[in-house]
Amino acid sequence: MKTGKPMSLQIEIDESAYSKNFENLLVSHDRYIVAFGGRGSGKTDTFYLKYLLELFQPYSFKLAYINKEKTNIRDQQYAGFKRVAQRTGLYEYLHFSEGTYKIVNPENGNALVPKGMDDPEKTKGLDGITAIWWDEINKGTKEDFTALNKLLRSPEAEYLQFALSFNPVSENHWLRSMFFDEKNGYRLNERFRSKGYLHHSTYKDNEFINQEEYLETLLADNYDQSSIDCDIYGVWGNPKKGNLFINTFKKEKHVPPIPYLFDRSLYTYISVDFNVNPMTALVLQTDLHLRKIRIINEFRDFDSDIYKLCDWIDRNYNTRDLFITGDSSGNNRHSYSKGSLSGYQIIQNQLKLNFTQIKAMKGKPAGYVQSKRLIGNAFFARHPDMSISNAPFLVEDLESVSVRPSGDMDKTSDPSQSHLLDCLLDGLYTITRGNVKNIPN
Image 1 (cartoon, helix red, strand yellow):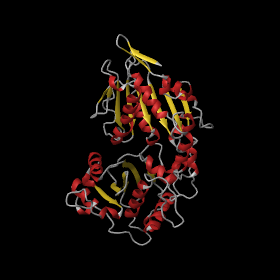
Image 2 (cartoon, rainbow, N blue to C red; image 1 turned 90 degrees about the vertical axis):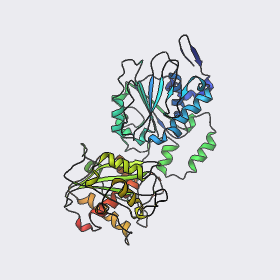
Image 3 (cartoon, rainbow, N blue to C red; image 1 turned 180 degrees about the vertical axis):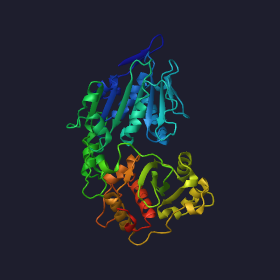
Image 4 (cartoon, one colour; image 1 turned 180 degrees about the horizontal axis):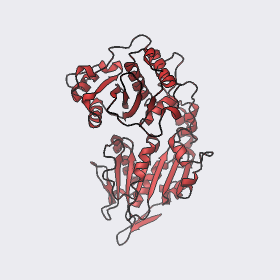
């Protein structure tokens, strides 16, 4: 495979540098690339090579490579681009910026530009982009995709492209309904069929690994059958729903088609789950008599801390008019704070709150988990005006977190899940003062 810049550099990549199963993907100029399947297939490395080669083309090319969390860019995509560039001999011709994680061909200005979707200025610096690649886009939202896709309009582009790569985690995911045929989850729908390239792969498509050993690694992860189907066979997951911790939530009823935004006339509670990764918080609004329950936003940030959460709260909300609640572990002291303050004390100091704005339990009463489950199910079952907006990961928790035979929440399937559900239930417990009778019918 050859690519080059006139009067300058001719690049030739040996066929041993890429999988033959991905050759068409490597050269695709389709408006959309939808690459999905199991783990270990080699699809991510193919994208690294594909877009590194585009840097040497004679036409203008500027790619935005996306991660849901900005802090993960260095150790994930940026490290991947460096590794593949070094392996293929392209590294010496490119400039890798260790500060911005931007990758540039100094000969022609073609560039790969990183962007984290948790950045409040998520679209800043993306003028003139000609392509977007989002690996693990299943961690993002439909709204994220739509906002980014609107940026692909450069008149200088040889072609415009949005590439998506992901594991098919759930039949209920927005990617399934947006891109795929209603009756066939392995075929693009009519909207994308004529302008999209679809590629499905599993570890069996990767000739560069020991497939038997890799299969043993996947099986050793002790997944449930839905995860095995997704990670090994690359088929859409179908998590069991018969034993959910909250079994009265109905997406079609509780997630409005037009999301609710912040309402100044309502009280604002921010419920925090401490000592977890990702750091999580939920914004809940209600009136004095609990006649409206609006979940309007969520905070979910990997490898984060309370100080980053406080910055997010301060940027988005009037701190004079809100209450902080959450789990009782927020009363514990944190070694990384000055003076070893508790989580709630850090929030109070950082946001300059008075003590009446902290609505924290000093400890968990007997039967607390069972009580908050009862309250949560009662709210979704009988409250006349309960809604969730702008909180896709909370919805995912509600649709997937199950209950143990003991009545506790099952937190073993995915360590990153269940925390937002905890935020919700702690918040509902606070506003009802732990009494299900305080829920209006």
